[in-house]
Image (cartoon, rainbow, N blue to C red; front, side, top):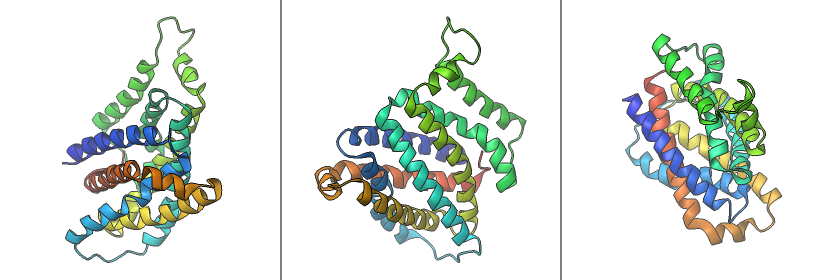
Length: 240
């Protein structure tokens, strides 16, 4: 079941990326970053109608604080990345997240994949390399240098590192709550932080939001589905 949920996460994430790229041509990337969390909350409220009560564990608050900081920072870098560079140059950088998880997951949650799973993760990173391979390249590291020449790709590499930390904190947060409760608290906190940043960085934020709210709401729906699928997947298997 975790494999199906992970696939649905990837599917909804790709839709969210395309909608976010389109929105970033009309409004500031700070507004798009805030909208992802804020406009997901109404959909989480609907999901909450079927949620059973749960008791928050002692590690919930520290995990929430850590994940709020990481997701807020990574969101700004993510949307700045897709604003300045093509999706084809930026999104592949996220395939390095599994590689970074091989370092962070054993340290943070004590999880490491079995040999077959490890092979699968290596193949994902190899796929990113092949994607940017060129027959006339001067050496084996040329595809990576080609990737990092783009400013958006460098921003997205930072996001990949932050995601490898945040995914483990999500697991800790869910162990001390539930997938839905964790998602609601996390997105509410992130929307507050990014909302404050948006208001200081964008002078006509309210006007831009009013003029683009249907598209921003669609991004919020994608985010709600991503979080639901991803958090339930994380509950069923190891983070990497």
